[in-house]
Length: 147
Ligand SMILES: CC(C)(COP(=O)(O)OP(=O)(O)OC[C@H]1O[C@@H](n2cnc3c(N)ncnc32)[C@H](O)[C@@H]1OP(=O)(O)O)[C@@H](O)C(=O)NCCC(=O)NCCS
Image (tube, rainbow, N blue to C red; front, side, top):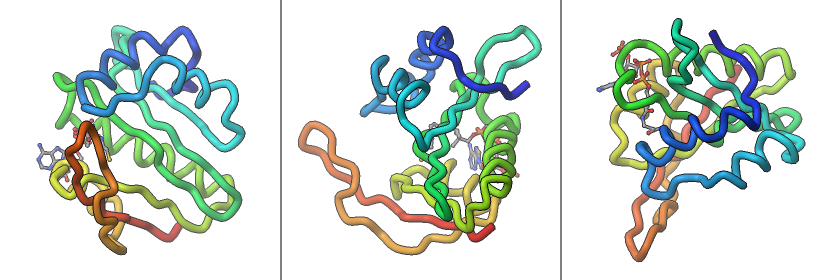
């Protein structure tokens, strides 16, 4: 089941976030996205045991939508959950009258790039040194899809 993320979900989401990203968002960042960011729409995906197995944060800014964050719990990856969240947010963006959805992804993140290509996203350009963390930088692909 996909439902809107609540503040009470943050601890479970943080476990996934910290497992997936070196530059993980913190508690307050999720609070901001859920409660204060006027453009964000944050969703969690639950399995049959009501455990959170993934989440996605979509920003809808008039004609543009942007995927700010998406992750699936490591032991649940490769089971189609990422695709389910992508289909969900694409539907939301359509209903919100957005014309494009875009995102940035590390050039090394093959799994995510494959997922986005499967969903119809194209690489538009490379953002040099887009990801910077403790002195290490990596390029990011800017990807987009018209909807
Ligand atoms: C990227 C991510 C969200 C994909 O979610 P997922 O649930 O594992 O993906 P799905 O099972 O829905 O797979 C959908 C498609 O993604 C791609 N994909 C997913 N896992 C893959 C893998 N291990 N190897 C290659 N492609 C993969 C494939 O195109 C796949 O389609 P296919 O099964 O027909 O080949 C997940 O791997 C994740 O959370 N990664 C860590 C966080 C992250 O990198 N987020 C994106 C930041 S930009």
